[in-house]
Length: 185
Image (cartoon, rainbow, N blue to C red; front, side, top):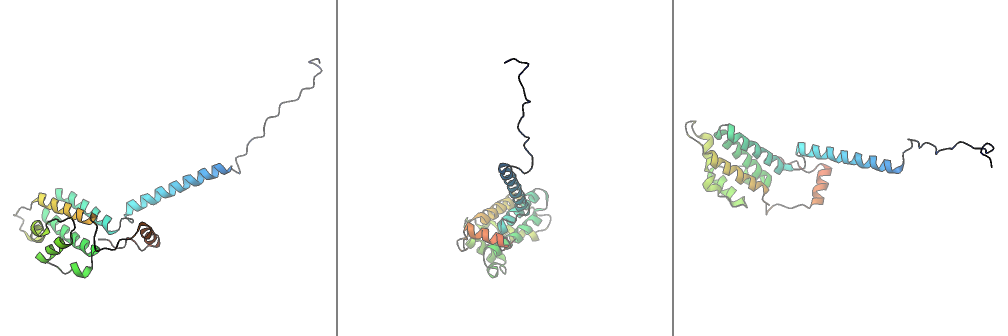
């Protein structure tokens, strides 16, 4: 065969791969990325609003604010706000009728009985009763007030033996139906 007599034809390549419709693998990837984005947004919203934390998360946040305020604000005001927060925590942890009407030493005794961390509220909590009414010339011990804030934080985290514990599945059901997290302090 002579090269001049050969009939040569052009090489035909493959057809171009169309961009649409996409292959199933791309759909899976887009779905997975969309799901990750949705979960990230949901997590951000839950952390931002504290919706999944309920009253404990709200109380922890307020205690953090009280710790910051202890450095800058008047300690009498911080003691007053801590006393109010402790009362709201007590009403969230137990029956409102038990804790709402207590005052003075009865209130501190109630705290002693219901705090599972065994902090001595009767002895060290007297500041909660007296600090809001002290004259401005008297000094309030910031260190003792910080110890009370730490004790309140431990009390929030402690398991309440009288409380009915719910399983994580029940908590998820309550959260999805909007029945969880309504008890804020």
